Length: 331
Image (cartoon, rainbow, N blue to C red):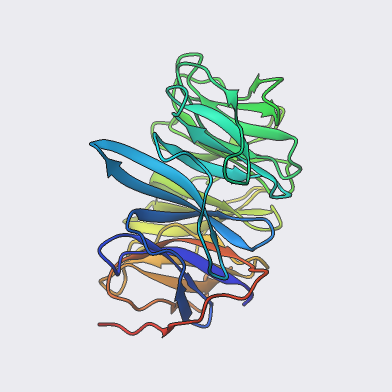
C-alpha cells in the first residue's frame, strides 16, 4: 500500500495531527497547543494543510496553517482572527480557496499559498458562502451559498466571475466535491426528507441520487475514488444497525456495503492507488483507524493508541517523514 495517512489523534489533552504508514509506523506532525485538524495535503505531497481551532478572548478562532510532512516550522496562512476553514487547493498548489469571516459573515476567498499573501474575496453575498471546492483543472470553484434564500450549489470561475447556480430546491444542498476527472460534483441534500448523496454535472444537468434504495437514515462523508468511478460514503442499512461504509458506482446500480453495521464505521478515505480504504471505527471500544481493501475484505486495525484517532487523509509524501515513534501500543 502506498503513501501515508494524516489523521487527528486525541491521545494528548488537545487534538493533534499525526502521520501513520499503512504498515503502522507513526510520527507526530503537530503539537498544539490548539486543537488541530488535517485538511487536504498539498498537491506536491510536501505538506498538510491544517486548521487550528481555539477560543481567544471568548471568540472561536480557526486558522489555516501549512505543516511540512518532513518536519520544520509550521507556516501560518491565515490571520489569527475570525474563522478560516474548509480550504481547497488549486491543482498546482500555488493558491487555495477557503471559507472566511474576516471581512464578512462568510465569504469564499482566494489566497496564494504563502504567508502574508493578499486575500481576494471571490464570493461575498451577505447571506453567506461556504465549503468551496476547486475543480481538478483549477478553472472553477464550486461552493454553497444562501444568497437566494436557502443553501444551494453554485459554480464560478476561479477569479470569482460567471457565477452559476446548479441546484434549485427548497431544502439544503451542501458540501460540493469535484470528481477527480472533473465530470461530476457530489453533494449532500436533505431534499428527500433525509440527507443523501447526490451527483450533478458542472452544467447543472443529470442530477440524481447515488445510493439507490439500500440505505436508511442520514448519508454522509462521500469520498471519490482516485479514478472518479466510485463514491464511498457512510449510512445505515435498511435493516438498521450502526453506520457502515458503502461504495456506489457512478455508472449506476445499488451500492455495496463494505462494513457490517455492528460498529460505527465512518469517514472513509481512499488510498492513492484506489485499492484500499482507511476509516475510523469504534469496534474495539475506542475509535481507531482501520484498513480494508476496496471490496471490503481484509479489514485490519491500523492505530492502537488510547484516545480517538479519526479524520484520515491518505496521500503520497514527496519528502522524508519525521522520525517514526514506532507502532503505537494499546494502553
